[in-house]
Every structure is written in structure tokens, then in C-alpha cells.
Length: 284
Image: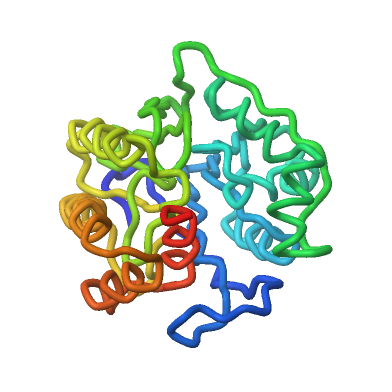
């Protein structure tokens, strides 16, 4: 899809994959990881990748996709520190020499934490044993939080806390596009585990910052591939979900009843397992 004669964008969806968790979600689903969106913004010759995926297999598939585009990969941008949005960066830099990994300073700090031995063992390798690359990643900041693709500005917008700390979005004004990482969701249950203690209020403020960019299209880090990227719709959906959480949390005394009430409100959203993880954390 393109909103400009000289720039375009495409999205690669890495399909949900199972987690190494025996416990089922209360609705009977197997524990799965949400679909991951990786975006390629391209010009006539060059391209920028946003949020490479997590596992070796996902990364290899994205690499094949980039190769088939025929574009030269110049940058890999990471919206936030969660490993599912950047663990594949190292192998992609090796496959596409000369490409640089860029992110905000806050994102880079969280990337280092998620890459630590303790975080890998407790979170990522526990859920996806022997599936995640070990290639080290050296991300760097860019002056004034902006860089270019064939003369077009790509602007890193720091929005603060959304579903984790120090998150950013990438604004491409000439495409009327925002690649929003996990600030905005699209047809998928939202990750709530880091939303307590005022986190959801901060998340709503982050959404306001994205809305003020007045983009026509927003690519969500987790999206239902059957849905479009209409900015107004995905912003409204993300806000409605958070507002419903605020309504239902005090009305229910335990994680299971909250989970069931949210499922009743949002039966169409993908991956109830993400909701269940958040519910358990919030009620713990």
C-alpha cells in the first residue's frame, strides 16, 4: 500500500506460535504468542525495516521477504525494548551488511535489559527454548531522533509508557503513516502486565501523542492480518480496550471473572492468552 509516488510500505505478519507452557488458557486455548507485524518502508532503491521479529524461523522468513523486495536495507528501527520486536535484528544485520539498528536511548536501555541472561532465561528462552537468536545487537541513536530514506524524513516520536516503558513510534509524514509498535493494537488482545500503578493512564497519554500526528495509516505491532490500518479505527479500538479494563477491573474480584468479562466484550480479538497473562498479573 502506498500513499506517495516515491514511498511505499508493506507488512509481514509472523503468525502466532505456541509457547512452551502446558497450562491452557481458561477458555481452552493453547498458550500462543500474538501475531507480530514487521514493516518495510521503501523507496525506489532503499528500504527501512521496523520491528524485526523474534525467533530464528520468523527472522529467516522476514529476511527472504526483504530479499525478494529487491531493495537495499539501510536501517532497522526498533520501537521499544520487548524482545519480540527486535531479537531478529542481529541475524538480519549479518544477512544485509551495512544496515544499522537504530532506536531511542530509552528503547536501547530496555533492549539491553531484555537481552540480559536473567531476562532471557526467565522470560524469552523459557517460553521459546532454542528458538531465539543469540546474535548480539548494537543499536544506536540518531541525531534529533530523525533519519532519512531517499530524502524523506523518518521521525522517531518518544511517547513514554504504553504496554512497557520508554516506547516510541516511527512517523513517516510523506506517507501519512505511523508505525506504532505496541502503542496501538489492531484486532489483538492488549498486553496488560505492565499497565498497573498508573500505567494505563500513561498509555492513554501515549495514544494522544500518536493521534496528534494525524496520520491516515497506523501499523500496529500486533495486528489481525485481515484488518486494514485505518488510523481512526485502530486508535479508537485501543482506547476502548483500555477504558473497558478500567470499568471491569473494580467490578470483579479475581482474574478469571475479569478475563471472562473481557472476552464477552471483545469476542473478536485474537489471542485471549495475552489477556489471561495480563489478568493474572493485575490480580496478583
